[in-house]
Every structure is written in C-alpha cells, then in structure tokens.
Amino acid sequence: MSSVRKPMPVWALILIDVLLLAVFLSVFCYFHHIREIWGIGVDPDVTAEPVMIITKPPRRTASDSTTLFTPITDPAPGTDEEPSTDGSGNPVTTEKIPEVTEPTLDTSGDFGYLHADKFAQGAGEVNRGEDYYQSHDVYIRVTAVDTKMDQLPKKASTQKISTRVKYYLADIYVRNIENFFTSYSAGKNKSFDQLLSGTGALFAINGDVFNTGTTSKEVIIRNGNVIRKKDYISSDICVLYWDGTMETITPDEYSWDKIAAQAPYQAWSFGPELLNDDGSAKTKINSNVWRLNPRAAIGYVEPGHYVLLVVDGNRDDTGDGGDGLNMDEMAKILSDAGCKRAYNLDGGASVYGYYDGEMLVSFEGERTISDIICVGEAG
Image (cartoon, rainbow, N blue to C red):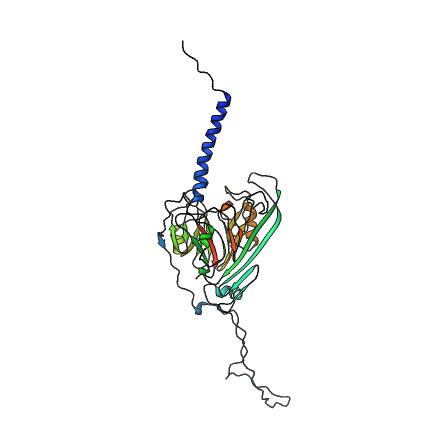
C-alpha cells in the first residue's frame, strides 16, 4: 500500500515564502545599493586612463573680443568742421577740452566678451556676501528657496498634494570654461569630501555616478578626458563643449562622430532631458525616478552662463529637508530660470550641494559617488 504524503502546514508554507522573499530582497539590495555605495559595483568599461583626450581649441584672442563700451572722443584734427564764431562772425578761441572716454571692461577669456560686467575687474579682486561670490573669473549667485508647492507625489497620481520644497539655485557665470569643471574617480567611488578636496571649488553638486555597473552606461567625458564612448546610446545624455555651448541629446539624435567633431569638454549620462527645444518645461517626463525626491540638475543659458540646482528632501523623521520635487516641477524651475537646456542628474541619497565652505544638502550615511560638478578658480 502506497504512503500518502502529509500536506505541509500552512504556517510552514508562509515561513518558506517569507524566507525566500528575504533572500531575494537581500540579493537585490546588495547588488543595487550596497555594491554601489561601497564602490564595488563599478563598471568594467571604466578605467583610470581615458580612452582618448579632447584638447581645448585655440583660445579666443584679443582681436576676437568685443569692446562693450565705445570711447567718446573730440572730432579728429584736420576735418572740415567750421570753427566757432561769435555774433559778429569773429572766430572764438576756446581751450581744448581733454579727451574723455568711458571706462572699458576686461573682455578677456573665453566668455569675457559676453559677461564682462559680471566679473570683478581687478586681478585678485574678490567680493562676496552670504549669497554671492564675485572674482575676476567667477560670479555665483545662490538663491535659497523654502516654500509650499502643490505636486503630484507619483507618476500614477491624479491628485496633487501640498508639499514643502527646499532647494538651492545657483546662477553661474564663468570667464573661462576651465572655471566650470568636474572632479571624478574613474574606479572605486569616493565620498563627496574626497572628491571636493583640493579642487578650489566654490560651488559643487553631485554628478551622474558613472562608475556603477547598473546605471549611467552611456558616453562619459570629464574635463576633456573621454572615459567611455559609444556607437549608440539608449538614454538621454548631456554634452558641454569646450566653446561653452551645451546640448541634451536623445538616442535618436545621437552621433559620436558629430559630438567628437565639436570638441566635447564634459558629457553626463543619467537624464532625462528636462526642457523642450524652445526652453519650455517638458511635461509628463518619462522617467523611473519621476516621483518626489531629492534632486540635482544642470541648466544652460548661454556660453559661460549656467545654472546648477540641488533639491533637499526628507531622509529621516525630522521633516527639515522638505518633500523633494517631482521631475515636472523641477523642469519648470529651470525653465523659469532662463535655461535653454536642462538635464537631470543623480538623485536620492546621492544628492550633495556645497557653497563656499558650507554643505547645503547631504544625507546621513554619506553615499559614495563617482563625480561632482564644480565651479571655482581652478584654471
């Protein structure tokens, strides 16, 4: 007579399911979070040596610069101008007025001819306040915002909720492109402090975490060093060229040969792009991280004029950091700031913001990252 297997108790089935779920979640967290935080999950394509270097084209010369103020002078000698006379027609001798000229501004550098009035004119001159910094080569104005805003909390939401939003918007002008640079580690991730140390950065935010093996698999360029190049891409990238122009590029628009021909200086790979071609904010942006979140983004107004945005958010029970932003609302902020192009960078616990010796945004645990975007006196 064959034996009949006794059914497993319900409690045992539940216990097995719970254990299997715990194993799955542990494996997921290890590969998706812990390896990235510890710098283990690096991309095997990324090495310390760049695959190629793109050097800066010849610097703008003085003859290429534009004088912003035209000197006012007396009529040139030897002209046919009639001499002054009195009522009887007799010549009147007058003392010659010394030549008077309007002051000219220093238009040197890559973008001095565009933004000369933004910079201090004396070499070594620095003016600073609580929310601004001005030197011969750099101008930064930081606006801190702490406000209430109605937002959709998730992409699938239909009802907006009242949220607290805290962010810092840096309006940035640089005389030379080298004043807008990156600090990075092509290999194991580092802390924000390690990446910031020794850079001379006055303002800095996190970048795109290109080291990790699970994200940012597209084109990566840092300070002219091509760390990774691709024949095709699968998500939006952002490219800053040596001439100061910036563009966001979709997979359909992508051509490595076209990018390389324009001398790229930086290229970030996270995304997505946030603005339409006319500078208006995109709506219903297609992103897996669209929800309310701490955020970082880069915006472009014109050569030498950029915007960096860092958004705080709650990572504890204090509520002091606010609720973060969804991606549509962030796009509106950058469009309202005058940006023609804007691009989303890494968010969540990877968000860092720093200004003139003070951390604006950081989170407990200090997740390690691969790169930061800096503005400073370097170069």
